[in-house]
Length: 295
Image (tube, rainbow, N blue to C red; front, side):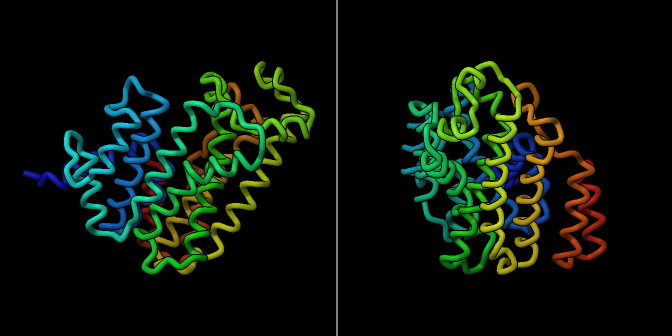
């Protein structure tokens, strides 16, 4: 019979496998226990997000998650709590970025239409830059200030990708994360957004956000070679795969209202091939990665 810990960690793995094929493929090549630690962090962040976006299906409200996380040592009733205790016992994580993540998700209750780029960057830090902070003690043996800042930039860049990819879905929820000032700069009106109009003005908006994400990804990958080799590979792989979502947006004429952009298995395989060469991953490992990428 499997131990209770193994079952809880497998439950976290199931959440990332079902919720994000990109992250699951990218970080699935880590050695244990780093791999399982990433799964636990993802699972808890997924629960925080679901508490806001799918409250009817969530086992906890945001306040309940925050209260139980605050009192993690005694929390019970769900597999996430023993999984988190295992995580904090094994790695030198701080609770601070987790609380900031909850703070960021709470914004969705009352800030639904963004006005400025400063608001967008602050939100991107709270809901995604913090994930970079959470992951660093797991992926890096000795993260300094520069490495920490880089990890945050990757998270924020990924959030820009999320915002572009999810425009249509967020619109149905009454949310507009693309700042009003950016729409106005390119002559794209609120009415156009409500009607899901794709025109040259909209393409200019998305191209500017794409350029912003590329700038932030570049900052995020500056220190990637300071990670242990497999962590370095997985971090860059996740960033490259995520950035490729915006290539798919452009390839489908910037229509993020009626379709959800994604990265094809062939594109993922191409990225994997490029990075296995760059990071000096063995041929045997590369074959395993190819099999995983197309599964």
